[in-house]
Image 1 (cartoon, rainbow over the protein chains, first blue to last red):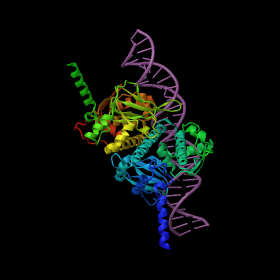
Image 2 (cartoon, protein in one colour):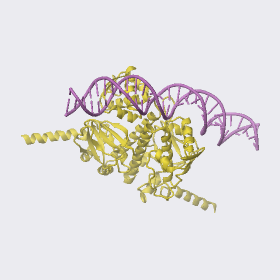
Image 3 (cartoon, rainbow over the protein chains, first blue to last red):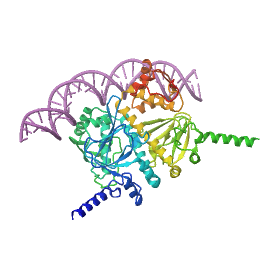
Image 4 (tube, rainbow over the protein chains, first blue to last red):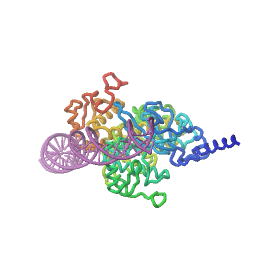
Amino acid sequence: MPASSEARAIDIALIRQACSNCSLRHLCLPVGISGKDIDRLDHIVKRRRPLARGSHVFHMGEPFRALYAIRSGSVKTYTLDEDGSEQVTGFHLPGEIIGLDAINAEQHHCAAKVLETTSVCELPYNRLDELTLLVPGLGRQLLRIMSREILAEEQLLTVLSKKSAEERLAALLINLSMRLQERGLSSREFQLSMSRSDIGNYLGLALETVSRLFTRLQQQGLIAVQHKRIRIEAMPQLRELAGLRPAKVSRCAPDGR
Amino acid sequence: MPASSEARAIDIALIRQACSNCSLRHLCLPVGISGKDIDRLDHIVKRRRPLARGSHVFHMGEPFRALYAIRSGSVKTYTLDEDGSEQVTGFHLPGEIIGLDAINAEQHHCAAKVLETTSVCELPYNRLDELTLLVPGLGRQLLRIMSREILAEEQLLTVLSKKSAEERLAALLINLSMRLQERGLSSREFQLSMSRSDIGNYLGLALETVSRLFTRLQQQGLIAVQHKRIRIEAMPQLRELAGLRPAKVSRCAPDGR
DNA sequence: CGGTCCCTTGATATTCATCAATATCAGTGG
DNA sequence: CCACTGATATTGATGAATATCAAGGGACCG
């Protein structure tokens, strides 16, 4: 019965991809939405096939048609100056929405490049706009997501304008660690998907400085580094270096995973 | 007829303060809204009496109840670190909306301090939220405003992470100049409402460096400085220093005012 | 007129960028 | 499997930009 089996496979695939069944729904656009409304949302979301490392979700200057939610993988957003030099504006993880800065002028002001094999959900903006009228919670969640983004960027501003190189790197590592933890992954050990050069660019440092800092933090016993693999050895100290309260009580397991 | 005259005075005051009659309506929340809808908006907006220099629109940590639109004057937003040190996150001019970073957690993450005598319009958020359902354009404009804010902060990130001290100050001056021009004020000559220390804090520089840069830019003939009064003497060169295209053709008078 | 705040200017110290050399890794084709 | 290649990362030596420390000068306010 190959046909039946195939149909069944598609069904499973659809179900697995549905927002209502997505493991990221508590972090993503569907927050605060349920039942029939989430089905409506599901209906306008287009799932794209996985993108290969190095390909783009969107390019700079492209007309704005959709927002994108990251389903798996990771993405860097960046702009190009007049002189063609790159400025990394963010690293994005599953459940996060990119393209928000394009809503106003209806044009993408940054490019989004995939750092590893990555799947995204496409959220066509005009249909999202319509749906917002039907589903009040959707507009609210969109505002909340944008508010969160503004807050995150203000915090990054503080890091860039006040902190030393070492503190900046610590802040990035802690930031990634916390975001991974929200996604149910280990906050203590992870793989960096971006290069030293990307990190330096993002933090306003030379890539050589970033490299030296990794070795220095390792010598201080705060982290263990092997190429792109990072293990945080002394979370409280690293948090303190990053300028955060030494320990925030986790809602998860007491071992801090 | 004192009563009649008084009533008339109130009427005029009301009319003068109405969104529909506000000189900032093309920059502020009412963009894309008109007729009956703008009257509805007018109805929920509370006009506050002018705030004196040094007073706060809202404090850090306060519960979020409203957004605020600046009617006249200027405001700095800032956060306080653990150690009590200040980080200026923005300078805000009439027509701009502050408090957007509080929507997500329903708590203000920064404080807003008035730099000179300033009037604000209070936009109670729960009523704005209701009104959004009745007036589709309102939600859209709010998203656009937030998108613009995200874009502005990304551009600031680039300035902080890539540019030299001189370029940063030039970028701030050009940014203020353009925003003043949008408001119908002179883009060539204006009064800074913030201190050197605030500027340095915002740009990630020591206040002494800011002071030195003002003298240096003056020596180079790019600007004329007298205390807080700035005149831009060489707009194209200053724009170039700020990392922008030498001249953007203005939609206003050909003399570039 | 004196006090305070803000700004300016100078001398020195420090951090980090830059230049340069080497090392390591991932892929490619022999 | 190995040698080759280009991208990425580490490490060292040097220099430039900017912070910090210190002192003095205006401007504003009572």
